[in-house]
Length: 193
Image 1 (cartoon, rainbow, N blue to C red):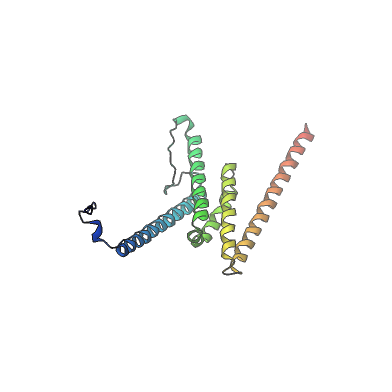
Image 2: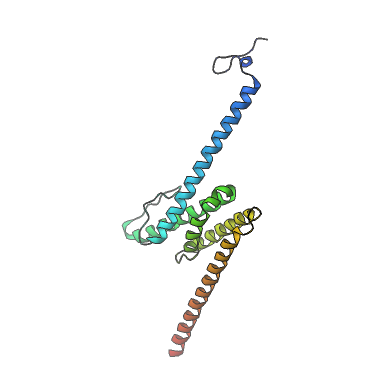
């Protein structure tokens, strides 16, 4: 029947339930602040990486990319390995952005204008369909976040929706023009044969 000692050497009876509850609340608050700061930092680095990777596409950007694996390459395939690494980096960073938008929409909303600067570059990526697909999924998640915010400010999403519409129309019309020119050149080549 004697009280047991806790790991600190004091009796369990020495601490009151109120102090324990207060400590748990403080610990939870500290953890949430740390997680928030961590997500905010990762989100910012991922957006920065993508921005840098699309403004200097001939080299692998020097900023941090969050690739959970490394590549080894032979000297003969160095260019292909560099492109593969760049594609993996872009994919990973866009996936991080998409997931942070899903699990921390308030944090994501703080970076939404920077996201819109980068997402269209990724959607127009010429090298990889998988980059275009993950970027479209991230854009969908972004639009979901905007729609959640529309209840607090009905005019806020109009800017982002109209920008998305304008970029989409531009993308489709440019794609259509490119397809038509390819069709015209291929039909011209076949008529010459």
